[in-house]
Structures are given as structure tokens and as C-alpha cells.
Amino acid sequence: MQIITNRVTLVGAPDPKLPYFDVLMPTPYGTTYNSYLVRGDVKTALIDPVQSDKIECLLRNLKAMKVEKLDYIFCLHTEQDHSGAIIMLCDLFPEAQLVGSAKVAELMEFHFHIPRGKFQIVAEGDVISLGGISLVCMPVPFAHWPDNTMFWVPEERVLFSSDLFGSHYAPAVASCPDKAVQLLEARAYFSEIMMPTSTHVARYTAKVRELNPAFICAAHGPVWFEPDAILSEYELMVSNKVRRDVVLAYVTMHESTGRMVQVLADELCAEGIRVSLFNLGDPKRDLRVTLGSVVTETVNAAAFLLASPTVLGGPHPSAAAMALMINAFNPSLRFMGILGSFGWGSQMVKQLEGLTARVKAERLEPLLLRGLPTEEGEEQIRQYARELAGRLKAIPEEEIV
Ligand code: FEO
Image (cartoon, rainbow, N blue to C red; front, top):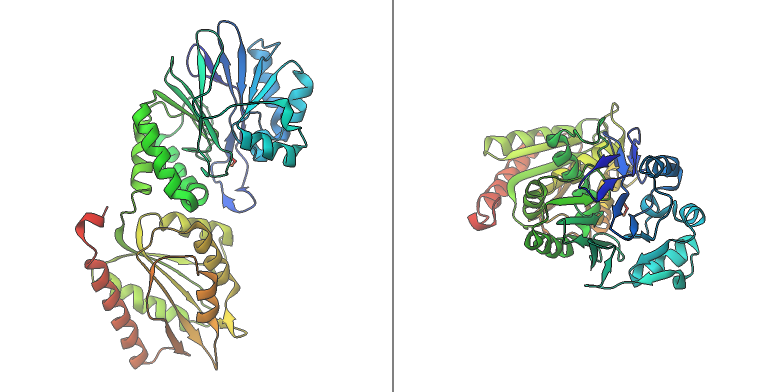
């Protein structure tokens, strides 16, 4: 629990031991399911329930705040990590009026079987007054679901931003987060939650900058008491600008692809290009951790390369998983390349190209070598690296971070 202002208190639940969000996204610092209590002169509102298994923590906090009655329960987003406890809360606070956008009410009907008629529907600019303090509705569709909704409290300059600006980070003491970790986790969060809809997110970020909030209360992670830090980070991440860097993810089984990657990385480095290298076959790391790290590294990166051996005529399954992830998260790359090795025949390039069809980056000519690279093969790889370096150096300065 944490007091944010005289009228706003964080009453949600930490989940510090959560290893993966959505059984996919690594959460080394756990997460929080934030719920906020807003007290007006006349009425009291709760912003977002919590995940169903965390209701005890929410109820404990409400009891500590001596809350006996809720006038409103605001639902900013239907996804179960925020709304899972809704049915239980409605039973415990039967007098509370549910508030949400039409899209929230629609999705609530499907996910929780709550009739739409139970909601007081609000739209852009609608105001609900609690007495001396009011909540203004600001829908932010596709940040990241179609129903995400922000609420703005002009009297206190508090923004409840739903998933936008969130971070998966449950600090040991809620009021004392490590700011560097918070920003790092916010960047990882952006890459795996917001990047697929970054065009929308860019618009919302500009809108929030104009609002100039004093506090941003997101649905995950610590409250932003100095919003400029997260707004500046988002402005960079949605800017479509790039670093002249290469992110290179690879799998190798018998060192043919491994040797290709080594020669390629060495030559790129010799050309002055920074390479972030990720081994998708690292036995010491869960594949999800490496996949997540690659996705985060592609934010503002100019080039992504995927290298794989051929397995049963296609890519190694770990490379295929990587391709699916890049396709889904869709970073603003300038260049993308597929390379690798084969023994006697391969459909690997064709299959990986199919799996990454949504990525808009310019495609580099695939580079496929048979077996362990020969001297001639290594020279082909160096040539590939020099050409890529040349293209990266040719990106206009105004497009560079
Ligand atoms: Fe944190 Fe989209 O739920």
C-alpha cells in the first residue's frame, strides 16, 4: 500500500515471484496488479480490481483504509490480470456502480459474463465527480487491447494510465523502487506489450505529454512520480528512429551456423557496428528469457539477423519461435536478414520468410552455406557484413537516435 496524494492510495497487490507474465514474458522482478483507491468529499471509487488470486491483498488494504463502501468500481481494461477479481468485488460491494467504456462492458460480458447493463458506460471526455475531485474518461484503444481506458484527475494531475507506461517490477518496498530497474523493465514491458501497436501508443504518449501529469499511476509497477522519465523513454521508443546496431539471434547444432555467426559478428565489429548476439540454444537460459531479451533489444535497432541450421528441411524450432516473436512484436527495423547452414537441402529460408511476413524491414539477400564454412564461404560472410555495415552507415542522420 502506498499513499500517492491526499486522495489517491495504491491498494493493489504485488506478485514479486511471478517468473513469466502470460507464461511468456520474463519477469525477473515479478510484477504488481495495481488498484487505486480514490476518495472524494462525497464518494469513493476503486480504479481496477486485481487478478483473482490477489483479492485477499486488495481487501486487506481496503480494510486498512477503513473502506466499508465503494460507490464506484472503475474498470480500465478487461484483461484478467486487472479484472479477475471483479465478480468477488461486486459480491462484497453490491452497492458499487461499475464504470467502463462500451468496449470494456462488451469484453466483460464475454470474459466474466457480466451483463453490459451493469456498467455505467463512459466515453471520451465524460466526467464522474466524487466531490472535490473528478475522473475524466480518456479511452486509449490498442494500448494494447481495444478496451484500454485512462482516467485523468485534473484537480490532482493524476493519470490512471491502465497498461500504458507500465513495468513488470514489484520492488521490495513499494515506495522505494530502483529507478534504473523501473526504466529498464518499462522498456522490456513496452517491447512485449506496446510495440505491436506503437503507432497508437505514439499518439497517446503525445497526448499525455500535453496533459503534463504530476503522477502517472499505471496498472503495473511503481507509480511514476517524475513522469518525464517514462514519457521521454516512450517518445524515444515510438520515434521510429534507430541506432546503427545489429541484433543477431542464432542457433547452432554442429558449429556450422556458429562459425558463420562468429565471422559475421567479427566483421561487423571491425566495421564499427555494434552487434548484440543472442544464442537461442543457450542451455543455461530458458528460451523465453532469450526471446524476450532479443525482442527488447530490437527496440530502436536498425537491423535484425536470424541464423539457423537446417533441421528436417526447415529452421531449428528455436529459430522458428524467434521468427514468430519478431513477426508478432514488429519492431521498427530498417533491415532484416536470414542466414544459416544446411547439409543436403533446405527450405529454411522460405519457411522463416513466411513466419516473418509482417515485418516491414528491407530484406537482405539470404545467405545459406552448405556445411562448415570454407575460406570462400567465410569471405562471402565478410562481404555480407561489409554490405550491411555500408547500408547502416547510409541511414540518414535525422533517422538516427
Ligand atoms: Fe496488464 Fe493488458 O493487462
